[in-house]
Image (cartoon, rainbow over all chains, first blue to last red; front, side, top):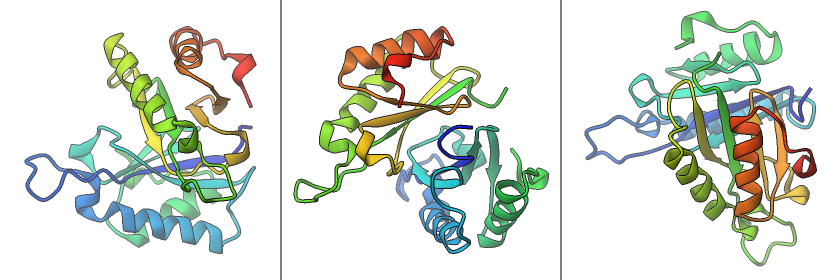
Length: 104
Length: 104
């Protein structure tokens, strides 16, 4: 196993309101990243050998965003709100079962 | 295979010069990320099915930094300069052979 059992990256790129291209933080992805990070910590799941949540720059799947990716599986998700993130945490990060309905 | 064959994340966290804890960008990691991103693009290695280089927030291995991680392998590296990054690109990202001397 690598340093973390599962490592999640949320794209928080923001092209600003005047761009003609979408970007994940236009959908509030930075706040969702904060939520996921706190939830993992509150559940006692953070740290070496466990789970890490990070922000990342543009993951270049803008049209399908907001997106996050879970490694080492390389599972890509889109999400709408905190309840989607809760489902990814409980099913995939903890239980090891990807959330098919959110996969892109 | 996931969306990218290999996905590299460089920690560019910066606690500022007054912190008593190290942080990767105190060693210039953002500039190294820029270098890696450009090098991958110049080599024609960027895009879906190929290689993606991203910045990330604190990867929480500060004392061993500056660090980057390569997924899906979950290989963690430290590096000093552009030549180290060139070696990671040529040996690991292109050739699939991790650079043991830089692994943490």
